Every structure is written in structure tokens, then in C-alpha cells.
Length: 198
Ligand SMILES: Cc1cc2nc3c(=O)[nH]c(=O)nc-3n(C[C@H](O)[C@H](O)[C@H](O)COP(=O)(O)O)c2cc1C
Image 1 (tube, rainbow, N blue to C red):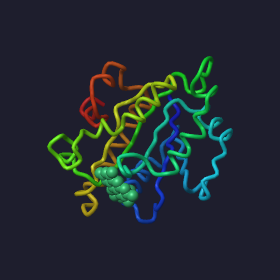
Image 2: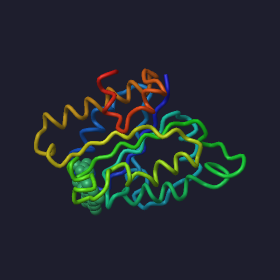
Image 3: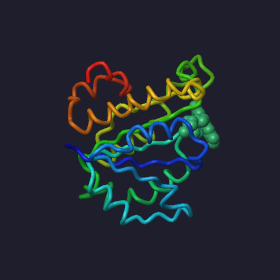
């Protein structure tokens, strides 16, 4: 069984619907550690050694957050800047993250059809995730197809949100229990495309 660390960033969890639902859906899973960055570091002073130790105890690192300005909330950027140090995460002989898997679990306000050349976001969502996928690769990590919840039309439909939470839970379980082969994972753009095979 792989150990999963969910690094969660949301500056206003009390106002969240999508991320709160996703978190709740995985909160009782064995082998899954949820690490809420804003809760641990309200002043943004990140304990780098503690974070690196936590990473060392896990195999799959999930970055769960809402998409903010085509990127992540500020604390996650601060976390990346500080924790992924030269000599630890990248550089000659750096192997702190070698072989671990990176899963971005992202909620968006924009609808799926807005994320294409003809849509008002002008590009596929995967294009906006390039800084994350390339960071993962530079650190010797395996980039997994992201889990994406386009939440805008679901926020007022509690049943649809619950279904998304359930899907997230099922997919994390499949990753934890290694029920998805590398070929399956390489073969899709989005993790939810694999719901049929798990
Ligand atoms: C500061 C800010 C920036 C945002 N930027 C984007 C964006 O670039 N693209 C997008 O689709 N939605 C964007 N949104 C909408 C959020 O992604 C959306 O409200 C969130 O994913 C819903 O999750 P929650 O209910 O957990 O807050 C933004 C929202 C805020 C507050």
C-alpha cells in the first residue's frame, strides 16, 4: 500500500464548497495524510525541514487546491519555493523526491468548455499546469494525470458535488493500492478518465 500525502491549500476553507467536499470524501482513508498548509502556517513561515521529513514518509504527493489566476494559492507557491531546495529536490545527487508521484487535484471556477482555444480561457487546462508538471519532472517525480473538478455549475448541486468527492476517493484508493498500471496512467490526460477501469 502506497502512502499518500495531501498537501492542501485554500485560504478560506470556511467559504469553500468544492475543496471542502473533496477533503471530506478522503478524510478517513487509511494511508492518507491530509496536511492543511494554511492551518499549519497561518503566517506563511514554512518549516522546511519538517516538510521535507513529511515528504520522506510518503510515496504519492497530492497537491489539492483551487485554481487561482491559472495557478495555485500563494501558500503553495511559497511552499514550493522553500521546500524544493537545491540539493534536496534537484541538482546533482539530489534525490529527496526521486520516484515519488505528483498528483495535482484542482478545482476551477471555469467550465470545461472554457478551457480550450475557442473558450474565454484560451487554452486547455493542462497548459496552465505546465509549471507543476515540469517541476515534478525536474525533481525526478512521476507526473500523474491531474484530478480536475470544474466546480462552477456543481456548487449549487450538492448531489453532483458528492459524486465528485466519491470519484476522488475511488481514484485515490486505486492509486494507493496500485491498481492503475503505468500504461493506464500514461494513456490519459485526466485521472477521471480512468474511473471506468478501477
Ligand atoms: C483569487 C481567485 C482566483 C481565481 N482564479 C481562477 C482561475 O484562474 N481559473 C478558474 O477557472 N477559476 C478561478 N477562480 C475560481 C476558483 O477556482 C473556484 O472558486 C474554486 O475552485 C472553487 O473551489 P472552492 O469551493 O473550494 O473555493 C478563482 C477564484 C479566486 C478567489
